[in-house]
Length: 461
Image 1 (cartoon, rainbow, N blue to C red):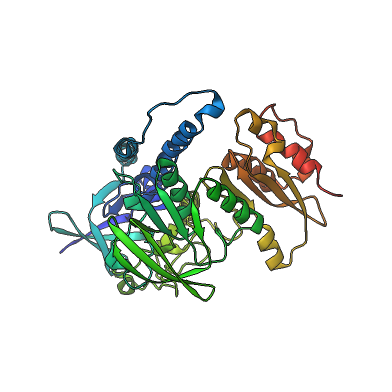
Image 2: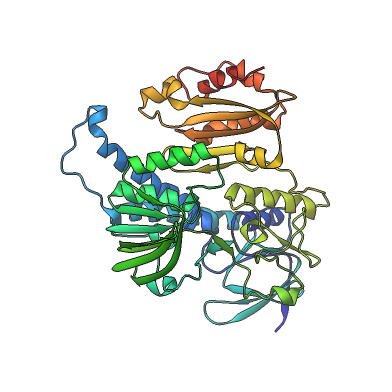
């Protein structure tokens, strides 16, 4: 079989991979992207954007529950999960069309099929009709993403659990959803399903939800979730599972030396991510992996094989679409002869619970682990007058300030519009501005950013 030669061959059409291909193709290079199923990757099809679409529908449902608070009488309203699903699917169709337009406009080729390495910088692609093509690239980009981790718990695989993919495509409401995992995905979907009307129980192996965040964050989120009727079981180690998800399941676990049982109708697995690096012939290309099965890369995102790069989740980058986009910038600059690295870059995040949780820079937990001294300032969201106008007063803002200078070390927002608020603080941190620049700023009234003034005004000298 003859090998077709390209300047750029990308395995996987996720955020970083597609942008690398589009960028290089616009420069006149011959670029091809091999995608097995989801055009544009997970984000527009089964992850970020679909989940936020469904979460917004759940937010609207929560307003119906609270309607009397806003002076609105509700009668005979109900949730139509088929309608929720169709709204999400319509959005996805539009996003796929947008991606196809971008591929055409850039000149990059999109090839639907399953790809694997057969040698150095050579990928064999099996097309849907069974035919095979061999692609060789001067540079090859591995952009295969990750998938939900299914832990080796006896009975879990046999139960046929939901992952986020199936949960976001339900046309019916689970009677009682058991969620394994108290991280970002588990919490976002737990709240959404509860607001649609499901009974929800979260089972977390650690002693608190979002255990990598500060204790006050975890406690506030737990209080909010319990206030919405979500059951939380922490410190629980699942030993085995009986039954079928979608019918009736029983979960056996150990907690504080005691055995417990939980029964429900559905199981959702949200306990981590596994990189998609298996069975794609990496060893034939001289590409090594780490102990966690991520592709081994250096700070420039080069693999152990010359001319082969890895980006996004599969390369162990923080699992956020915005980080994958930055991976594209790192590789694109380096392909042009630059020396761009991932070392020391900012990693903002936002968990789209209601209220949102967003952070940039150090948390208190991380600062203490690293022995970094800081000054703490904290403000309840109810102190920001805008929250009172929209009846969204839950949560707080807090910031860590360096003890030797006025530099902002970290900022956490747990509250309405948290994802938007952190952007202003992040820009100040990028510019190396002291916290006093935000303290002394004039922000529009009444807005959420106005809360930064009293927050930073409370910093001790």
